[in-house]
Image (cartoon, rainbow, N blue to C red; front, side, top):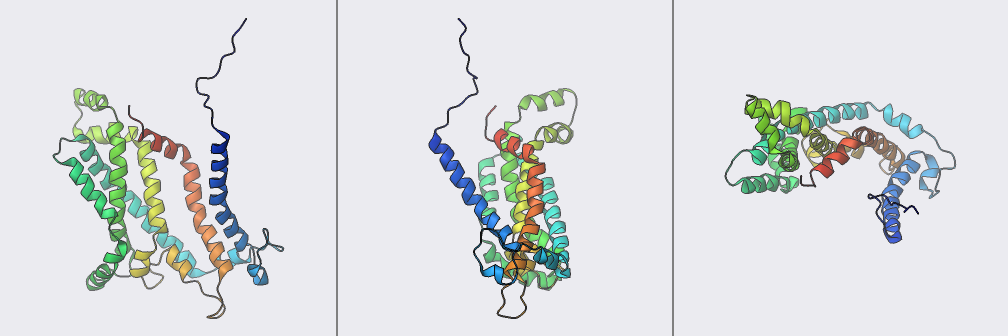
Length: 282
């Protein structure tokens, strides 16, 4: 008589857990659905609460795409976000490797000081940076946005990458050292390829944070030369001062969300692998 074998990976999940998961998913997707729903409405339909527009139209999307200021804002957001992410990974990876591997004293204190920067309120430094940038001539420029955004992106990159570097086995570095590789060569050719899931995860987090940041671009820019997408959307205006362009704002919000959605879908495996590898010892 043969015994029925059960899969060792099978885990019983209580039905209540599935109900909670379903509620969380619904709560997360309803605002997104309502945003798309509103973006497909126009005229009197914008004031209706229909679950689906009676006469869906892409007029709002056409208006947003044909707005020159929106195109400039997309370009500025791409340049700023890509620059901040690249620089944060370059300097953050080096600093995180030093905190995770090198025999430094008071590494915990250093990491705490790094993280304290990210908790500092942006509004507290917005006005001083505005005055300083105006004096040195980089107000309303992309460089004037990249520098302060990088200041807040670096702590996030350092803290996240430090946990990933700590999980990499020391045997890899010892083997590279035996083969005659220098510390710098070991870092670039051995450690970084192994830590790629963590680097991908950090890149996504930093990019999303920079892409969605509103206060600094709103304070440090006044024209389309440096305005990013969040500021450009906030500046949308209707036909008159009493008209709220809800449809175009919703359409623009959907458009700017698509790049983030595509990035997350493309690097989904790396993100999941990076998050789990940083949380499990060994």
